[in-house]
Length: 374
Image (cartoon, rainbow, N blue to C red; front, side, top):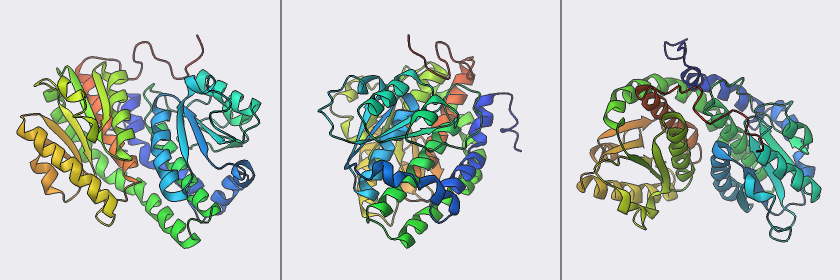
């Protein structure tokens, strides 16, 4: 166990437990294993009538759902709507006709999400729950339960529960792609092999990220606001990074699609507003490279304006390094798997900034692990 993983802070320990938690979860759900076949066996009946999926979740779990929206539409060709759980119950029953409903919750007891699940059940819709507690209310009441294998998460900010949600959601995307005839078994297993490589890649990179972020944290400690920017599947991770900073370090932060910065939010950027730019690239994917080129162009423009920039880029990317004050590197992976890696430096940034600001990072004020109704 590393010195980081042996920390007295539950949040830091749990950040460093992610490779193991992911390995357990991926072994359960990645294509080509008996475990995965058993886990997804009942899904054919659950989603066989559904021509679209509604994902209902809150907080970090909703950000996982936003990433899943892109995974499911790109890989499986199934339309997805991502709803705030607190809003789903009040949507018209005519707004979305007979979707499959997927709820995501760390605890499986989040009041708004549980209410959304019960409303979907009352409407006669097929339901699936992804939670970190296989004995939770959501896991029991949903038509199908797909529990993550993160293990107990003591710190209130979600870390390993979030990345294991992403792993289950990606595996489900591959299953749906196979079920809908959009992907051959060989292709699904190739995607699954890349997913299985993620824990090792993460384990290799974690100590380097932690040391680098601990060093850069003093330069950001007194910032009034931090903007997180990303395109495509990286935008939900920008949202998640901003949320982590708010709840852990009590700092104002916002996550935006990189292309939207000039449509209003740029008016808020000043010398006290650093930017965290998510710019991974998959050189084998033309769409990924197109998005990357746009993000690189924006980063260069911001740098020319004198802005301070922390970038998350793929190993070997010297251009983002030149355009940034600090550059953290991800091991290469595919576009849709990059979120499982890139969100971890954002977790570390929130942790080290909270530490410098004297905050009880494991028990932030006004927050609890399972959000109950008022």
